[in-house]
Length: 339
Length: 260
Ligand SMILES: Nc1ncnc2c1ncn2[C@@H]1O[C@H](COP(=O)(O)OP(=O)(O)O)[C@@H](O)[C@H]1O
Ligand SMILES: [Mg+2]
View: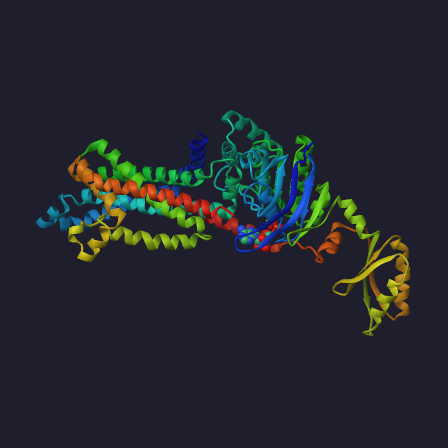
């Protein structure tokens, strides 16, 4: 059986010379939820846009359910649904107008459009509000209807580009439950990009970590986390003597079961243990005392995708405040235009 | 042919919003009223002087002005016809359209069609107001229909221009500035408000290269004199020709601007 998505050596260089995607290969199985995890500018949107036929790949082979994307763009468009990171809902139309127009863009007969619109709006709990202008919808509702729009033609593969960008934590969790529902009810293949670690962890069967246009790691979230090691100990030291802490770090590296020791941020050190992190804690504190270093705080936790991300990109992930601002700005402009 | 339905649904979206924007519609109504009322009154004294009436070709300055106001309406509404593209690009709607299997060309054509229909309703309003104010269009209802058609075809020149510019623009402010820069001179350097005969020589010369002049000319012929096809043909040819040219330019620039 053919894969839902097959990508081989995809490269995309924009006209201005930006090498947004730099030779990536992966494949997605039917009915899989596959995540692309990476910071802003990693090349996530670019990859999605080549897959839905919005931009042309510079080189590489792209197949969707065995069909070549460049050779049969029309066929591809009918099989894919796409919700962009911008939440492209027309605020000055009602929910119902938005979705029925979408149905017409996909050349569905009017009767079918009415039926399906009702169906998808009900799935996303917007049916009751269908006659209101989208202008009056909350951010979460806008995102929900945006995803609903992408489903009107019953695509086999759904592409969601940062579906929870700029939403608050509760709304984000709610969107996840809807996405999960889609998989359960339709058995749909879903390709999702995100820069929220918890999102990839909660939703995806497999995750690719992408940075600088390259895939840095690809596997099931659990496997990726295992690669990190058994336990992570974060600890804050304080010492009056400058040389004391480096000496202590060296000593800690000499303990058994230690995989890696390094500074994380703000004077906090991250110690990765192969196993039995709990038994290491007293030893670390004791070593500290021997080196005249006080242990201010110490914490043990299981590795998260955050740690995986840090390992493969060398960066911490943070929520993007800038993007939220951009959404706000867009909505403000839109409101201004209504008058 | 799905392209026709594609064009229609792209246009329909704009038309729904057009009918919903009540304030804008009211402004569209009031604007020609002000122009006709104000200009009509201002010029009354002037047209009472014997020589002027002869120059205008009518004793009724309002009748002379009506085609001018119609063209002006088309000029402004048409020049903003592409602005929705800037917006659509901004909110990502353009991508949404392009991710759908609609014919690529239908986006630009759909926008132009919607502008054309919006302009059409505005022109009908102007003609009704003019009639109420006592303007008699000598060719009657058939003449009105032809005037409407000319206005709609003329709108393609402007919306085509507007779309071509908008396709490459990132902000609306730039487009608005550009539209103002272009429309006002087009308006005044034409025979829309004053006959070429009363213009300074250089301005009249400029007006001869202004498409607005050629849109006004047949409309004025139909309003003031009657069915003189032979006299109208060159102007009509120019308007239709330019409309086709701008239709193609818009299509071409739009395709280019949206291909990456
Ligand atoms: N249309 C474009 N033209 C030129 N460069 C672009 C364009 N779109 C994105 N880029 C650049 O390509 C890189 C990857 O962008 P993108 O795929 O949007 O990343 P992500 O979605 O992961 O944030 C960035 O450096 C971005 O600035
Ligand atoms: Mg992106």
